[in-house]
Structure formats: C-alpha cells, structure tokens
Length: 221
Length: 213
Image (cartoon, rainbow over all chains, first blue to last red; front, side, top):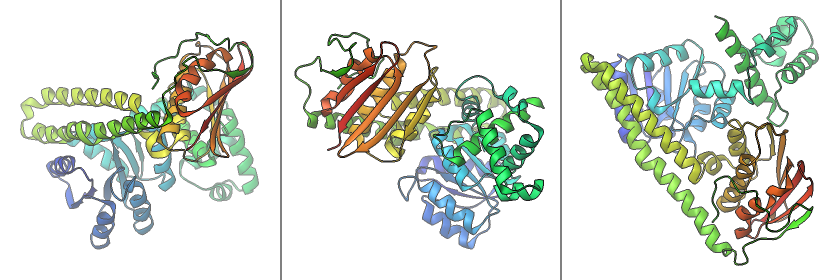
C-alpha cells in the first residue's frame, strides 16, 4: 500500500522507512514534521499516514496534524506511533476519529508481519490499539466488564453496537426509529451499568463503553 | 525534595486530630531551591526520552529489516527485539518516577487519571484542565500518588479534586485517613504548601493548598 511517514527522530524514521520498503509498501514520502506531511499529502495520494505523536509543531504535532489530514483526506488511515501508550493520548486520538486509526508503541511494530498487519487493519477501517493499553482501559477500574455487557437490555446493546460503528446520537436514533432523546437515555443507562464515571467527558465515556463492548465481542469469538 | 516512595504513616505532629498540620522539618527547603529541583527533574525526564529511549527504539525497525534479510536468524532477532522492548519499559518506569511525561504535556488531571488506572483502590479524579507549572504540578502529583500508595488494599473509594483558587492550587483528597497528612505535607511544604484535615480517623479529608508563584 501507499504510505506517508512523519517522524522527527532521524534514526527511527530511517529504520521504519527501510522496514516499510522491506514489507513491500510504497513510501510516498518521509518527512520530519507535521506541516511537511500535510504539504506532501497535498500532492501525493496515500492509503495511510504514519505519525509520531510528539513531533513539530510542538508539543504534540502528530495529533494536530492528524486533525488536518482527517479533514482533508477523510478516507486516509492514520497510524500514531509513540514512545508512550497512555489513555490520555488514546482519547485524543479517538476524538480525531474512531475508524481507520491506530495507536502503537514505536518498538512494537518491529517486524514486516506486525507492521503490515497493523496497516492492513487500519486501512480496513478498524481501530488498532496497543494491546496492553486496550486491556488496561477496558478492565478499569478492575475486574471484568464482560458480564456487565451481558446485563444490558437488548435495546441498550443495539445502541452500544451502533456507537461502536462510530455513529452519532442522531444517526443511532434514525437507525433504531426512536428519538435522539431516547438514545441519550439509553446511553446514560449504558454508562451507569458499565460503571463509567461522570468525571470523564461524554466522549471519553463513550469511547470506554465502545472499548468494553469491542472487548466483550472479541473474547466471545 | 522529598521521596516519592510510599510515605510513612508516622504522625509526629499529632495530626490525628482535625485541623492544620505543622511541618516536622523546621528548616524547609527554600521555595526557589524546591522549584529548581522540579525543573531539573523535568529536564532529566525529557533527556531520557530524547536521548537513550529514542536511540533504543530506532534499533527495533533496523533489526526488523535484518530479520527479512536473514530468515535463519528470525527467531533470535525477535528475541533481541523483545529485550529492547523490556529495556524501554524499564526506562518508561524510570521516566515516570522522575517526572511523568503526561504530567509535563497535559497536566495534573490527565496524569492522575492515567495513574489511577493502575491502583487497587477506586479513585475518582475531578481535576480541571488548568495548568500550574512544573513545580506545583509535580509536588501535587507525587503527594497524591504517595497518599494513594499508602492506603491499605480494600480501602473505600477515594475522590481527588483540584481547582485554582486565587493564586493557589487547592487539592482535596476525600475518603482517606487524616493520619496520612504529614506525608502529604512533606511533598508540598518546600513550596510553601499547607495541609489541613477534617473527619477521621479512617475516612476523612486531607486538603492541600500550594501557592502558585
């Protein structure tokens, strides 16, 4: 596939560039900061852009650059690489998009197999999250929420499934032939059954709910 | 500077009773020296990230390329890559203990929320997005996590609130034993911070006020 790369660490950038080429991908450009990436992609098509979170424009150029890219090229996949796997960054990434995005540690995409698998899944529309972080989030604060997902009513489960598809409240309402107000009520019940605290933003809790659901589906397979 | 390890529950000031807690160190570090310490910690953490950690990360894709050229060495090189990941995880732990990168980049709320993902006790974090500078945020963060680490497992849920009030950061830890207050004070007194307690003996509130300039 066609890949664009932005990373300010020259050594890592060169290494990743070689690995992408070894995996048979076409690297349409390899640059050191977010503005250069936006410029590059104005003239080149790519299936996916790989961005370092912490690069110019400081402090987290990868995130602000990704926002611009998602706006200009909504179908382009985004893979964020970082030295840290923190839920704070994951929430910011999921605010940029909940489809065709990935967040992985720099040193965990070190083989052609893992790198290509990560890129394939992103281009296929999935959310790819560093496994250790996804696990921590879904299990927070403790215990296993799978059984909690089973306590949701069939209608709440429908709502949660549509949330996981990235639909807005209005989109969910249209799909289920109910009012947006009814959807809000279902979502409030879902949050409360999943024990998601009110201190997070609405979006934060929404994402945690979706992750809980995705995880419960994953374990059922 | 005080240690960020779990504070002792010693109570030389008799803070079991509600009210202000007096420092047990008569000669607290001057505020400026304390601020310098926090700035130094922050620089060390950044240096660790920008130097050693980035160099080690860069080895991983390079080794990945070697794997494709030397298929017979694939398993051995994968083992080396796993070891580099372990080294990086250890460096991340050290960076977090020096000065958490999320605290530096995003502030007290995100840093505490990330921290409580790992704690046994359920902690509700109600902290706004305001920033207070490296010294105040560092002292407040380590005071809170020290206090949480000192709670016995099975403790009831705790709430952490922080707000800017006038020229100060006001932080309240609710649901904790007030006897932990002296250890909290150790973290903040160098910056002119004050600690008061209410309630108790097992479930009370420790309130901390740290001037912001």
